[in-house]
Image (cartoon, rainbow, N blue to C red; front, side, top):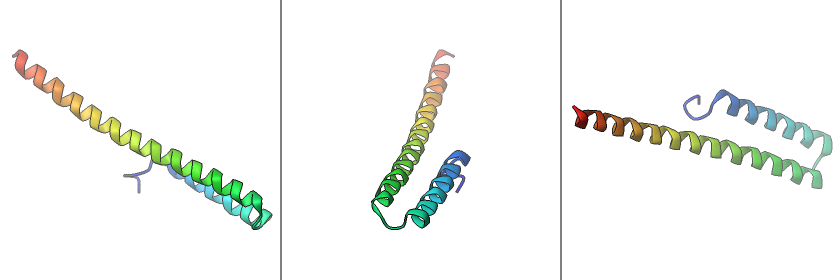
Length: 76
């Protein structure tokens, strides 16, 4: 799981889920539950965006390393 999520992502997921479950038990199935579900979905979306951004950054860094190596090879 560490391969896909950082420690901070896992903490946010856990805290959000705990708060969602607590709201479910304290508020019951009311309109407030829809608000809590919206907060949960926003948290998940932010985590997904963070994952995609980190993957893109890794790809960009790899391409930059390749370009740097090519430039060094051509200058010799």
